[in-house]
Image 1 (tube, rainbow, N blue to C red):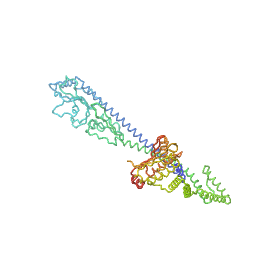
Image 2: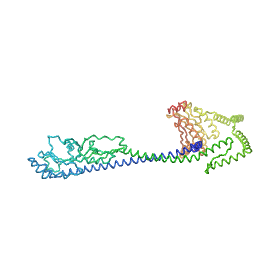
Image 3: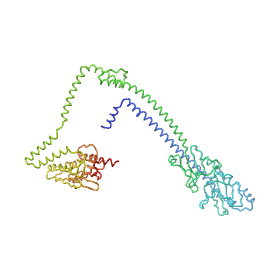
Image 4: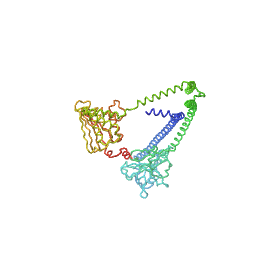
Length: 603
């Protein structure tokens, strides 16, 4: 039965109530739930995409503003390093502190304050000149005190400027600092004492930049993977530097944790801004979306359900009455249906049923029963005729007839005819009694020889056959009727169309792959396109011209016994002949029952 008819048959067997329930579940409830789920997941995906995009933009904005602050400090540091008057004043050795303070009051007091801006916390210059007094924006580096931590950032001789984060211990309480430090070595003529500039960035401003987005937590990380600022510390830099927590694989995969490098310039190489979105805000949006879609799903389910329920009742009650009265008809009770019929198709059916019931009640006593008796008699007669037509002729009648023909031929000296009739009788008897199972190869070859002797009688001297069989293969078992159809095919399609000598070879030999069986002829051959067509038809259940039935039957038998391990091969050249055969693997040859072996093999 075709799948379409099978489905319709199953649907026809369902009660009407279940059909309406299926319609409701498949056509109303399931689509509504599917659409609501689709919108929910689509909304959640859109929220995630939007928040991820907001995180990326916020991260880029914060990184850009921090880079701008650092670039401003770099420019300020370079401006200080280019001030030759500042070099001259700091490189001079003062005889007394009063001499220094005179120069300080005249030119150094407000020298560095003009470089101040909203992003700069403090600007200082340091030197090894011991004649200068520490104070205000100037400091003296002395061996009597530990070197400041920021000076380590300038250890590299090739680097004249650096961005560094460190703990400032010069104050009463250690503070975090973010500074741009540089060597003041622009003027070699004023190089008596080493000089350094230090521009401190306002950590309050940095914290404001990192804390601008409430739903995202930012942190500024230096090249040593230390958190310099995280948006939590105040303007004075309280707290200390701490190691940057590594992002987990789940955070990286979610897309709500990103890293943005501050650039590839040497003084900020390795610095980055890390942004982690607060998923609690996202969870709130998801929950709100779920509630909205849930309410929408409830409303869109309840209203159609109520409407379908009332419509279903108007159909089901009337069809139920109609069905019950139809069951009464089977008991020869033709009662009319007394309900509100309606004007739709079901109402028309009820009216038609009532009319039919009235007419049947009038005819039931005289005409209807008589017709039933007549039809029963006619059916009995038809069954008898069919039984006679379906009877078959006893096969022993055919064998007795062949034996009688063989006796007559023997009496008249027709030896060749006698032998052929004998072979034909034995051939047909084996066809009727032969088991559809594995048989020894020797038995299959004897059966083929009888068939080829009959063909040799038909073709005469222009036909010959050869068996090239290794003796060790005769006891091996193969599926019955797996070689004879190949021989018959060769005689029918390969040799019948040629006029010269006809020859068939039956080959059985052992190879490294197993038992190789083949049938070869010197017939007309087959083209490559025809071979492809035959192979397709062997794998199908339909042959439009009936020419590949034998090959298809062999293919199916091999597939039945050996599954996919044995394949029928076909090789041919036009005008030179055809070779058809197959190879049975060695492990199948030693299995007493192929089906049992296959079970063990698969287990």
